[in-house]
Length: 149
Image 1 (tube, rainbow, N blue to C red):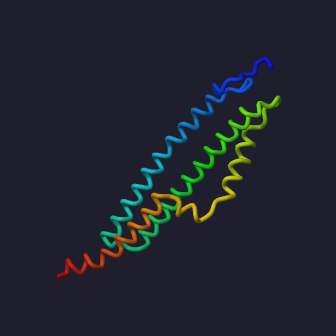
Image 2 (spheres, helix red, strand yellow):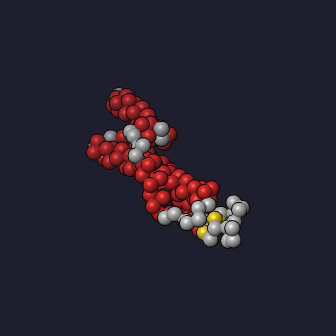
Image 3 (cartoon, rainbow, N blue to C red):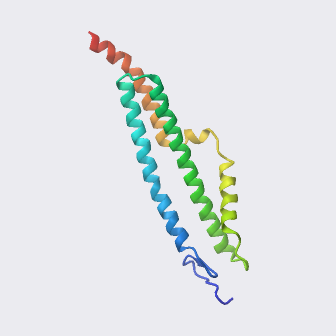
């Protein structure tokens, strides 16, 4: 068919996906920002426990960590949805290009509908944060007693 590209060069028909793929690459790079944010929240939360700052501050750090996990999950779902939509169009090579925005939204919503609290247990940084926080809390009453003697 004229105008159709049979290679996987990032274009199908008259559509080039190079711009979308570049944007996806940037989104994937944002993952390191999320990881840095989670590391910072962990550090601050641990400092709060060590200085025995009020519990509401620690609760805020826990909420912040949950927000990072949710953001991370949504980012991953969005990237997967876009990649899936691109692959669908490349493989199918339809005569009429579908509404890519709608296709991505459908795939994203399908992924989001599978969300559960178990996702938090699958996030390594979140699990590590909760374990370290628990261990620190166990140690601090002993450290406080040791300082007083």
